[in-house]
Image (tube, rainbow, N blue to C red):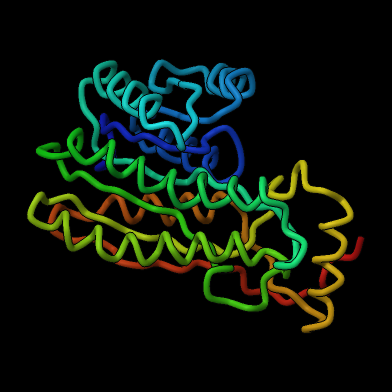
Length: 256
């Protein structure tokens, strides 16, 4: 029996990518999960495909405090407990600093940073007093490494902000016994660039090719999910502070 059996966790951005991989890994470990995402139709299709009463999905915008309060409370009431929150929801939009559009600027800041803060605010009173409560904030290797794709400076800056915020959050919640972890994943094959402006994406990749010919690859979303499970599995009073997981196989950079 896993130490996560019958525990309950909320995952944001859970309908695809890292969030879906994390959700599946938690279910396999015997946990109950509340899956949050903005697209209700897509989310419910995913939850239906999981075919288990241990998963429920609620459409929710992480930038809306009232939606978060309703969703988090409903999940805790439904399963009878809440042992952790994995703040994974995030968006990236390519664009040089000179050309970034105002709506893309605000979308990334509001979702990636403010959304993470709001999720933490909402979860703290619900986690207090629970069995081995945890908050995991998902950052990105783009926050500190310059060999990621270029023209994602705003995305990278929001993830750096998440890391700095998480550092203080860890200290604030020690007296409550809530473990706080930041996970910094590198690139994995997801639909991360789905919906991106093709011209802006092309410009970013062209700029990226000017600073080297290879990139690191070989990592799957499941590897990040395993890192999350490992961090959740430590006993109370022990927490991973910052964990970076990156692919480690150099290959030629992608071409468009």
